[in-house]
Each structure stands twice: as C-alpha cells, then as structure tokens.
Image (cartoon, rainbow, N blue to C red):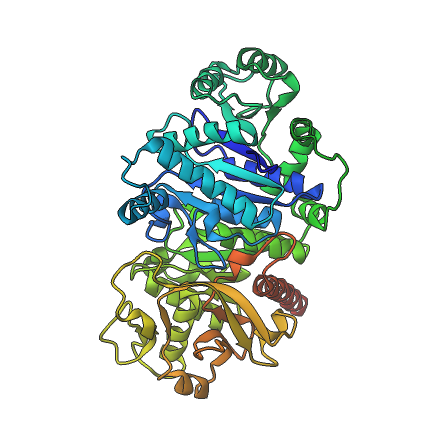
Length: 545
C-alpha cells in the first residue's frame, strides 16, 4: 500500500563523477522553494559501514553529521543546498546493509528461511528508505544511487528501486554524459545504450539530464528523446557553471521543476527564496575586491579532501562581499622550501588531518602567520598544532608536540582523550558529531559568534589539549576562549595579537551559503582588513620616497 509520499531516484550512467550529488541537491533546492519538505538519501555500494576509515586521497573528504555519522562528502552538498542537518540514517552503504542482514539472520528474524538478495535484502532497503521518509516527515524523498548503473556493487539496490516503483509514486532521473569527438560533433549513442541497460533492469527514466563538453545541441536532444522514449522537454542540459550554486536556477530555466510537478501533480507557485539568490549573485559578480587564502594541508593533490573548507571560504567571502582566491599549499613543500611561498597570502588556514607527514611544515606556517600578523584559522589538527607552536616558540617548551606524532616528547601539550585509551577499533570510535562549547567573553571567538555564551559545532578527533599544560600555556599568553561544558576539554584557542583562532571542531561542516560559518566570516573580514592596512602602509612608504 502506497504511503502517499513521493520519491525521486537519481541514477548515474556511462561514467562516474558526473555530479549526481550536486544534481540531487539542486532538485531538492527547487522543491524546497515551493514549500515542500525534502530529505536526501544516498546509497554507496562499498562494503565499508561508513566513510570513517577511508583515505582522503581515494575518497575525498569524510563529512560528519550532528549525530556523529561519518558519511560521503555528497552529504555536505545536500546540507549546503538545503540548509538542513541530516541524520546518519540518510546514508546507506553496502556494509550497513550486510551488517543489518547478518544481525537479523543471527537473531533468527527470518524464521529459518534461506536469506537471499531478493526478497530479503531488497525488502530491507525499501523499509529503510520508507522509514527515513516517515521519521523526517518529508513530502518528497530524494535517492541518489552511488556509482553507475551496471556496477556489480549497486545492482541489488537498483533492483530495490525497481521494486519501490511498484509500491510508491517514484520518478526516475538518468544523469548521463554526451561526449564530443570534435567541436560540434556530439555523440548520443553511449546515452542510448546506457538507457537501454537501465530499462533492462525494469526502470524507465522519466527525465534524462546530460553533462557534456559543449551545450547540448537540438539534434542531440531530439535523438535522446526519440531513442530513449522520453518527451523532448524532459531532456535537459547540465552545463558547466561558474559556481555549483547556480545549477538550481539553470535547471529552473529549463523547466525541470515543471517536469517533476507534472509527474507528481505538485504546486507551481514559489513559497520562498531566502537570501540564496543574493548570495549567488555575490559569488558570480566580477566587480569585487579579492583576498587570497592559503590552505596549508597534506592532501592538496586531491582538492575534494578539503571541499567543506573550500565551500566555507566561499560562503564567508560572499557574506563579506568579496572574492576569495584559494591557494592550496602542500605542507611538505614548506618543510623543503621554507615559508616564502606564503608571503602573498592574506590569510592562512591549517585544516584537519592525521599522521606525522607534513606536520612540521604546518607548524612553520602557523609561526609565519603569528609573527607576520597574517589572519590564521586552525581547524582540529590546525588548532592542536597552533598550541604546539606557541608552546615551543613563546613558552619555551622545546620540542613540544602531540603524543600522536612524538610519544617521547617532554612536553606533550596535545594528548589522547581519556575515553580513547582502551579503544582498539578505528571506525566510528573518535569523538564525533555536534558538541556544545562555552565561549569566554570578550574574546575574538565570542565576537565572531555574535557574543553568544554557548555554541555547538561538529567534531572528529581523538586528541585534545593536554589539561596538564593549560595553565602554563595561559600564563604564557595563549587564550583558551572556548571549553566543553561537560569535561572542560579545550575547544578554542587564540592569540592576543591580531586574528589567530584555533578550534578543535570543524565549523566548515555546518557552513551553508545561507548561513556561513561565523569563524570563517570573521577570518575573511580580518584578511580584508589586513590587506587594506598593508596597502595603506605601502602607499605611505611611496609618499615618503
């Protein structure tokens, strides 16, 4: 029996990496502007239970939710576009489903039956999806199927979507790629073959959206409509855009929402826009002042490893009505070549990370920022190294370090959390999710957060500022501007002079275009102010000459 809820399933075809997450989020945005409550779900076929143990080089950023779920980075896109916080149950993986089935089988829930992919596994998938829709009280559930149709690892999930369409009101969207052998010579045959494969699995796409190297030609559109048996108005272009936040409007102009509304019989009138369009216009406006922000990391070869940091910078720049040019700096290069490559930066961010490689390069970057008055923002590991640098250079604690990198240091200013000492398993065992933080009055962090006494940010760490050294560090001039109300864990540190803030949390994970992260907004403002000051000092020197 149908629940009355509506479901949209986004399937990839031909190749991966086409942007199903951005498309799914954009569809959600269009539905939200009409007043519908939507929730996205993503399936990933890998056998990991979650993303927590995955290497950023291979998988990109691990995104963390309020409830501590470690999920695919597409969830960051969903939250940024929809300005909502999602639960861990919105993430389905092959590992989660396998564990669920095996646990039920061991308990005897299947009453002696031989447990099979169909119907047991597919039924569990359908039940999970329906439950998330019910728990979130959503009007429409968006389902992104990770990977590409035809992959062995997502075949059972595609079958579950086929079965779901027999029970509920479902609309299928095929995202495809239309290559060009030469300019003006687009080829639709790969899309036709992919569509045929999808239909052989019992699914008939209602809408086909095309990525391509050049705008979709009228002839290509007609061929896809004819050979894939969809109305020509349901073949849409997903072009390259200056910023992904433009995609909802691009799809709106091609009447994607109208196609969805016809299928589900939805309302046409927009209910609200918020300040989305104003912020997008600020991003794409050409007549803007610019600041250059350096991200000093150890995974810079894979930009997706820092996607939330990058987006938080973009949001904060738009809030300050400037453009932010991002320079990715590999911390190991600083160890080899020194800090000269940082001299052109207006602000420096050291993000989170794990492992010893590149740590000294990050510490050198932090020292360069502190001594030259360059605005600094340290995220998680970036805060811990900020403390270590200050302990070494200001407080005279030679060789101060984190126990993670030097277990024999005489000054372990960063130590493992007590609750982590007896943990052996790696997955989902860190301090994860949203935790409250009490802010110290009249500090920079307090000012950034609108002088609020208590805030909440998301975390992902095993180590903390060692409480044995906090008094000595404070006596040396370091300010601990935020602490956990539960166990007094240091959550934020800052320098007395200039703008230098470190946070144990990952505020980038909660940054949205319509609600930029306060620390990033304050950081970008400080970078603008410093650039103005430096420019003013330069003019004065010229006048003296």
